Image (cartoon, rainbow, N blue to C red; front, side):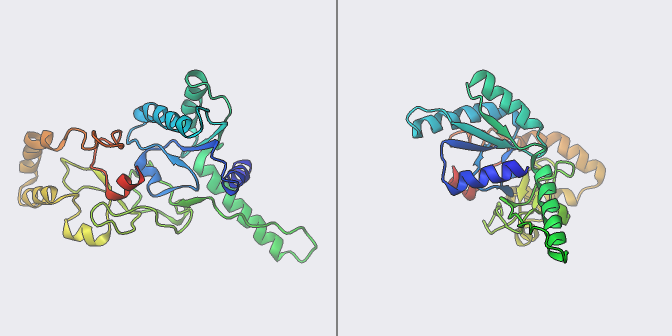
Amino acid sequence: PDQWHHKLKARNDTNDSSTLVLDVRNFYEHEIGRFDGATRIMVDTFRDTFDALDEILEQHEVQHDGQKPSEVMMYCTGGIRCEKVGAYLAQYKGVSNVQKLHGGIVNYMRFLKENKKAEAEARASSSDAVKIEEEVSLFKGKNFVFDQRCVGQLTESEEVTSDVLGRCFQCGEPCNHHTNCSNLMCHGLILQCPKCAANLLGSCTEACKQEVVKMDAMTPDEQRSYRKENALKWKPKNPNSASALKYIKFRPASPELLEHA
């Protein structure tokens, strides 16, 4: 992580566009936290990563007179997805100079914590020990936690910095709070601020809100029967199929994402 940190800092300081920095996580992960200078792969399932990556590489070559990236730096949560993407780049795309963040964001957070501890100990020492400069995190925002599948109950250990990178799905205000739509037939994962959550009863749209109100008036058995009969209505075709965000298939793209695309 320390080598990655200094390598990325040097890349960003020199505006080295020939080095491609890839966030190989899903879009809902990096919409709340990511490294400075990273290219975001806009997918909602990992299986679409390789098709989306092909398009990113093609765009890079267009912007660099047909040249492949001189180097690819990539990261994910714990490192597993980077192994697969790195192998794909080497075997199928002819990109062999690939640097992966060892241990992923989780290990990078550990590096920052250890560095901060060492810096504090050096400051507290009365000896002439060499001062250790505290490193400023190049990862901004929050690290998405898969175990919870929702980061609304994040502890401080998952908040890398206080930067709020996400936007509420409804109103567009800064928001890093993920939640699943309260309409269980939809259950879409969105960012939602407290005001919109209250207005929509935790749902993602007015249509879903009406379903929540309707099912709240039913008994549990009636709810189960109703969901079984109507669930297919809430599995729409890809709402972004005609846009640059066609690999985000399970919810309409927010204005913030469309602007990024």
